[in-house]
Image (tube, rainbow, N blue to C red; front, side, top):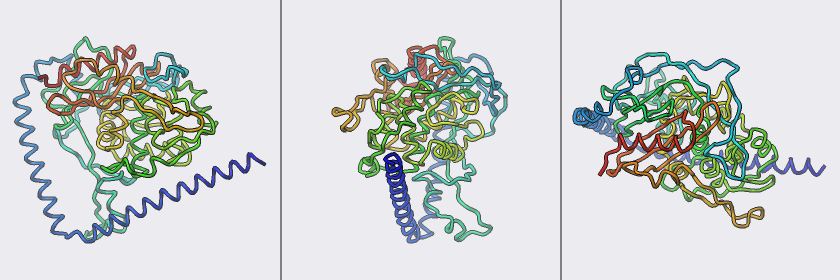
Length: 452
């Protein structure tokens, strides 16, 4: 009977929480709708003209920059024409692909067991993608858009206003492409998969099997926090004052069992402990905690499974559903849980555009909120950032998320800025350990970031 009352109480709390979140979303949409209704059509037309002109100017600037940087790009060398080609499709391994987990995950909490997120190895299918370097392409989106996107500001009843045939606006997504100067990796870089992108220009500077199928391991969690932040409406400049971040969620035995059975890294939350939503976000990234990630999923959607559906909808929104699919929010190995280093780069770029997600991904350490289970909180670290901060990368590594399983070996996604503030993204997978993975990122940034 006591268990029934406890379950009922938790169910009521979950229902109230969901109602509160939905009401906040409705209020935000109503406010945005009012704002849109009073925006003159002429102002919108002027905005479109301004954006078009800015795009033309940026395109001319990119062309001039490409010409001036041509010698540098060509000097970086290439490991063969295969590395300079875009891979349009991926082929996943057979059903009996190895899913054994192993110790050595750079994400792992020193007090936790070895984690289990993994990677199938795909085969290349050559094919050129006819897109213009540096452009932002408009893609079909059947699931709606994230907070702050153009489609999120248009309700279904508004989409046909002033249009014939029901034509609707679609969100823009980031896309990076190969150029005449794109190279392969030097032989000293040991990672089996990798990509380096000039974020501003949208140019792929160097790549190795960039669009070949592999498991993203715990790099999956970048999409986990992006999906959660968008679903909860956390972003924008005032994210720190969002009351949802101070809401609490109770860790259940199902969550801790999931982490234990799958030998995941974790924050160290206990059954029955009420932790803040803010702690769930930071706990998902810094120590790569499965307890935090699954807790965040359940807070947002009521169940892990329902949240994974949201993640795959987000992939569709980003134009990545053809080459990336997730079956869990943690990064556990599954033959149907796959991605590419290119897709992870796009996901990281999108997450870094959300000010709150960027803050989480850039934190070197974080102390969880004090509660009755942990009177001093729990201190967690992003070990990739702490280890690479003393290395000479010709700039600063700002954001990072690592991963490891036997199938994918050590992998990492990072975003760095050179001494001029220009940003680059580097994603690698297939290194033999955490330090070789870090060393690969250092070597790649040293090659492509402008020194002093």
